[in-house]
Image (cartoon, rainbow, N blue to C red; front, side):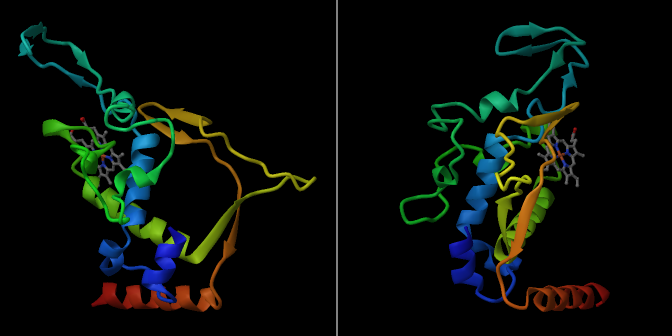
Length: 196
Ligand code: HEM
């Protein structure tokens, strides 16, 4: 991801204009949403009246739970599903490939009640992820003996319908000369654009 950011953005912080040329960031986001969906059981729904679904009567009051976790682990769509592998969303030339139906809505539910904030959310994640990876290197924090203090890939916290990784510490290192000044410049530009 950082190699692509460096070759496309160079010394300029990433912007939405760079997005089409940063397919690896898009793939990284899709894979994160697939591998550890924030809302693994979606938002439960209740049948407000008797309905028929695929020939079965579903009585009024039935609770529906959308098993987003299991759908995004279907090995027919996502071979080796427990493996975190952004490249599954890229073709041989590194461009975004979308042979997987509905991959653009991974983690956001489906149908009439699909998350209406999904584009807003993905846009925000895109610019945050691209900017952070462009600006910083991330390493595990170390304990007093210098050993890395890692967070396991299944160390999750349960927040009702949301599942998030438990808090953990990292070492964040600037990877650009004069980063402070570049970031301040960016903030000034954005403030100026907002006040127009
Ligand atoms: C990564 C971020 C987000 C994820 C993973 C997410 C996921 C979801 C999921 C799984 C549902 C349930 C869909 C269903 O019932 O089948 C949902 C519903 C909803 N989301 Fe999001 N969401 C995110 C961000 C947002 C944002 C930023 C907004 C608003 C700006 C938003 C607004 C809503 C609303 C209003 C609903 C209820 C829709 C309805 O019941 O008709 N979400 N979201």
